[in-house]
Amino acid sequence: MSMEHKSFLFNTSVFTKELSEIILTAAGTENETLLISFINENLDNLKSPYSGQKLTNEWHEELETEDIQELADFAITKYYNPNQELGLSFLWESLLELFDDLDLKYNCEYYILGKSLNYKNFILDPGKMGLGFVNSEHITDIHRELISLKEEFADICEAENFDEKIINAYEDLIMIYQEAKESNCGLLMTF
Image (cartoon, rainbow, N blue to C red; front, top):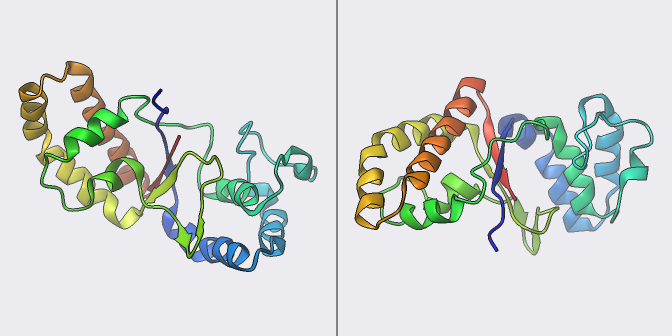
């Protein structure tokens, strides 16, 4: 059974400046102290990744695994709203399959799955189903590229007997990138 694709507008540039190193340091040292401090210091700007509700001083009570992955999941909500999901639902795999036939600037998986945050043996993946980021610096180029390849994509769909839903999913992907471009954000992609 296919996983449901989700994407969110995500402030990748501020995330990179403020939190990505903290996550990687916590993972490399197996010490979550810096992450817990970050959460406590930014409590007013964080939400629960489970409920989408604003975090309170009792946020610890929501923890299930209490590991670095889960703490990072709480901390990254500073850079996106978990209540505003934009994903491709279950059509992402078909899109990805057809992207192999396009001449794309980046690796085809980057457009739909983003790039993971990793260091040595650690990969940020709180839900254990995949999590990646599309950097804000790439959004405009990717948006422009997707628009320019729309007709070619439709021709590939027709040649390979894919139905109209896949073309609609491609248009949804263009809209996701357009929203990111208009918001001056990157994207977080997950399942």
